Amino acid sequence: MCFLSFIVWGSINVLGADSATIPPSTPEIVSREGWGARPPTAVEKMANPVPFVVIHHSYIPAACYTKEDCIEAMQWMQDYHQLNRSWNDIGYSFASGGDNRIYMGRGWSAVGAHAPGYNNRSIGICVIGDWTEQVPPESQLVVVKELIQKGVQDGYIQEDYKLIGHRQVRATECPGDAFYAEIQTWPHWVADPTADVSTNILREKLKPDPREDALDFPEEHNQLKRHNLS
Image 1 (cartoon, rainbow, N blue to C red):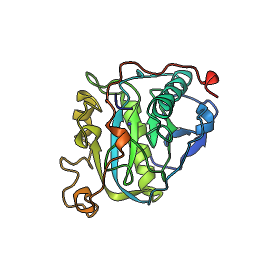
Image 2: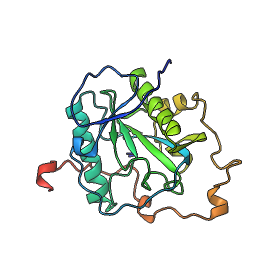
Image 3: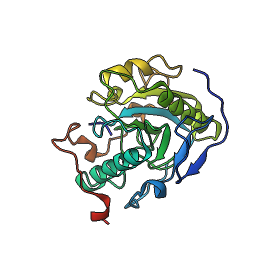
Image 4: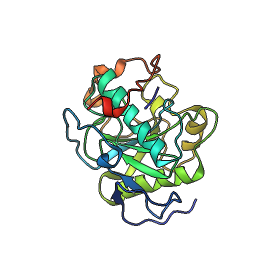
């Protein structure tokens, strides 16, 4: 499991309240409080702007198309990452729901746990669902692109960032065959993420978080309800 057209840009609003599901001109970001996140056990700061954006799919949980279902998906992913894998928090920087909302994970400036060797130099975006045989809805892709562009505009992501899929940094099917084919058409996608990059992980001799060596497809997903875990 891998737990990550015409666009008008503006400012992002971080909201916990419900609103229309039609994609706005900028993505609505549901705050951690808005989806009931458990506090992280630790936070390691990351230097911005970062040179990479890493795209994921969740595989499990499945795609969500209402705020209620996407909140449940976020809680399940955090439960799995924190309780089953003993990570500090949900691994991703952000997640994208089929309700055309962005859900805040670790955010713009915290080191993630989603891509070995790239966690301290990337924004990891999980597009909730299994995108092996089909791509996410166009409206969801628009919201993901808006989030990336806002990261650039606000100084969190380098203007010349490299966009890659999770499978390019470890042995995994993530972000799914269909979705991976889609992101290869996006302007900043690169086939070799280490080519001509001053932060080349080989030169810096960075080592991945050993906790990321867990199986990518666990036998079962933690489905304990959040109110039983507080």
